Length: 243
Image 1 (cartoon, rainbow, N blue to C red):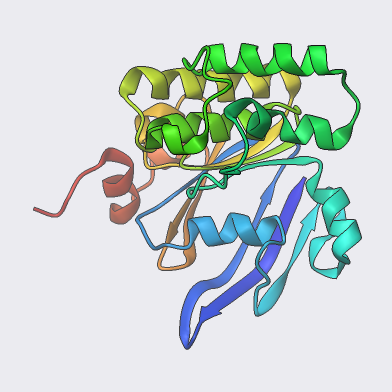
Image 2 (image 1 turned 180 degrees about the horizontal axis):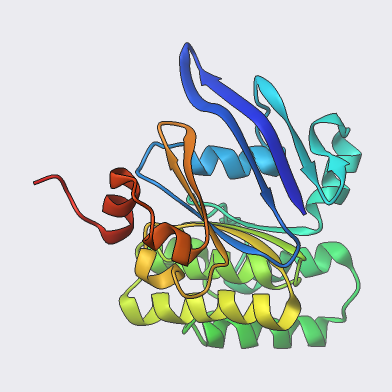
């Protein structure tokens, strides 16, 4: 589903991503982990062709994302769901209008079914009855859940999650991870999940990619990461320090 090869991205003279290559198979849920500033968020933005690298290639579902024009990119992104750290909610829209936006853009469902889907998703993320509120009336954790609902409501085959449980309490975080797992098992979606919650993703992801200083330092399954003899890999996975 996704293949990136030789991705290098600079910020000024600083190398933020350094010759990164990886693939994500169809139906795979991949966890992208690593310390802050390792380049995780930047990498998924490059996968979605929201940011262009200095070098490298990006193919999604067989298409060269960096060669598409604006119209072709809009079509390709219609098959993606994206949850990013800054929420990206429309302030002038209600919660219901924000979540329903992808469905109304597609124009395939009636208003009654759209209303039902929005209500169902809000219930699943523990926010029932807030359809008529505006983003400015919500806490950061509530905005995160609304953004999650908008990303998944049109059931895209490819999902990018940038720290979907940041700022959420443990119970709500657990429900979000359950939803991620359900979408993979029931709908066969392909997803890339950035997270610092190792406990939350270790049972629901098929593969783990560990970035450090813009480079891939590990790629493999849970069994492989737990048996790794690389000190940094073990420290990060177990949440240990040198002290």
